[in-house]
Length: 202
Image (cartoon, rainbow, N blue to C red; front, side, top):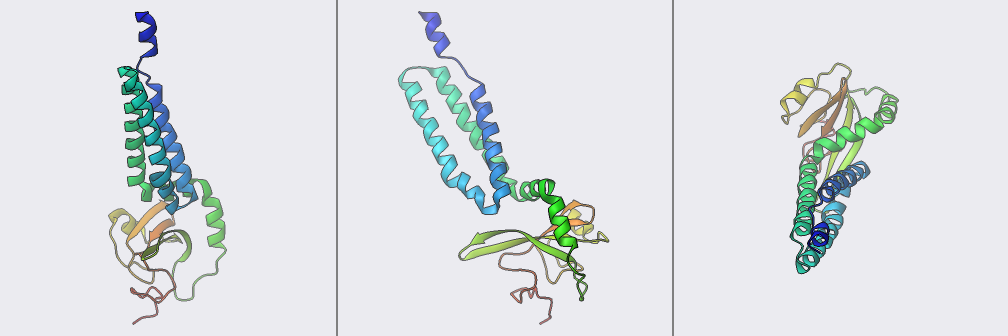
């Protein structure tokens, strides 16, 4: 009888592992869909998962199975820790992941553009997020044949750099000659806005 009870109440390390792996897979797939898709994880998937685990935790506690309670608690912790780590690094992970999978398509589309008459670098809108009173924030893929943006990417500082119409908040190097450039919120390339990103002066 004691042996049967101990078999039923045991620590299951697979549950936290599956939780962490599942959270990683779901979030990476959401990153591929777009920048705003991660809110689905925060507002829907995460709460449903945690609420379900809490119900299982209460059932295990009611049945006096402390090791099963610990397994479920570790499962929730693994889910939250992995989700937090990925979401905090979303702005670095999403461009790298999308570049790894779709770079050939991006490259062919961008290189097909004619050269700019005013010396601006070839660019293509690649990501956008924000809505309502906050946003949008736009990320452009930029082809820089001379790698003049490499210093800006290394310094990770905001600034106005050659071949771009206005100050930008971030430059990220994807590979030689290819960069992801993040504009400030509500600024876009080719539009006359607060930072005069049309490059037309004034």
